[in-house]
Image (cartoon, rainbow, N blue to C red; front, side, top):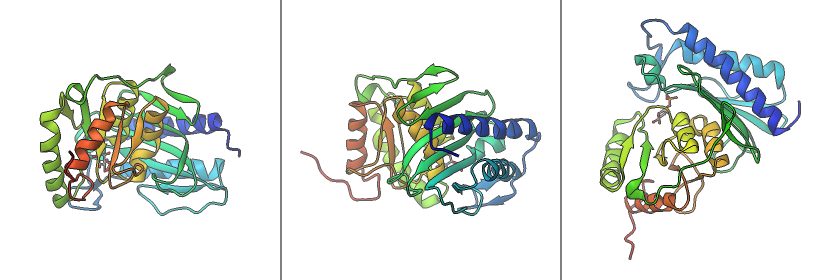
Length: 277
Ligand code: IPD
């Protein structure tokens, strides 16, 4: 198996679509919570596990030398230097309730499996209910179902539609609500759609101008972050850092810089705000 990014993109697409079909066709009328993870409101369903199992089985057959980092299972070590980063259902709460924004996210990265340090090579986000499929390959652009994507060009933060998300821990949510109270009066409006991978793809196609979230996991951002970046978005963190669980921000230049400054002032990365002159 090689490292041609277009081949990796094609594999990410076929894996995400196959798992997406499983999730779509196998969703029972009433979904049960199989377990909870970081908190009592952070659910895992049998389908999260089944979808990840399918992805892992396919990868073991097609890319046996690559490592795997997935939301629902143990890390698989590899020897190739590449890691597949899997979110078998991003937007599990939406899946649970039947709200239609949830996706399978598959990405492959080179280097350490850490969004601040990896080089994402290819990725696919497949929206399960409506079939929208976004892909990107490093240097090869981002597309949705064959249409090349380009970020929006809002004139100001005040006229920007901003996506965000919240963690599952009560303490973090209380802090996120304080930051949101700073952001909401300064933007066109806020959307909390419930699947970070889709939010990032919406930034790529200009359906959201900006996105930010604290507490995001590597698998939430791996494919969507590359889709957004390949569509021209700046994807990073605060205070000169890269995208990380501390803070991930995405959007078009130059407006994204206004949001970064606002989030820095609000101490959205857990540090005290700095006063700007
Ligand atoms: C969650 C979603 C949500 C985001 C959370 C994530 P999951 O992923 O992406 O939009 O706000 O931070 O944990 O748990 O549904 O895979």
